[in-house]
Amino acid sequence: MPATIETPHLTVNASITETTVAPGERISVVAQMVPRRSMHVYAPGKHTYQVVRLVIDPAAWLRVHETRYPAAEQYHFKPLDERVEVYSKPFRLTRDVTILATPDMQKLIATMPTVVIAGAVEYQACDDKVCYVPARVPFSFALATRSLDRRPPRK
Image (tube, rainbow, N blue to C red; front, side):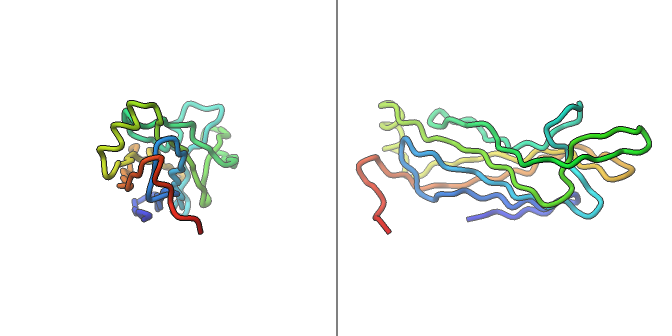
């Protein structure tokens, strides 16, 4: 159920680790990205540029965890003699979400045959000369729900 989106700056392949969820389960949203030749996006670091983000839209039944970032590479922007953390090669962001298992959320999810986990990859891409307007690449996944007493069959 991956979604592949091409932009002028990079390719985003968004996916999710499960297609059926129950209260209390933790799953991962994954964004694999491939910057176009000579492009980079900003990684977390000691700078003020817009860092690439994996954003998950809030939902009452959902707890969103921190994004896991890979190690960055150093980029030297010669005109300003500036060194910043970037991704210019294929990389992957992962963000876990937990389906809440409180009694109220279990009742709510029992009434929902599917839940939608939606969000976006937000980034600002630059090349050796230009930083482009920040972009947002949306995605969404419809997942079937099951109650805690309906466990999936063992493999």
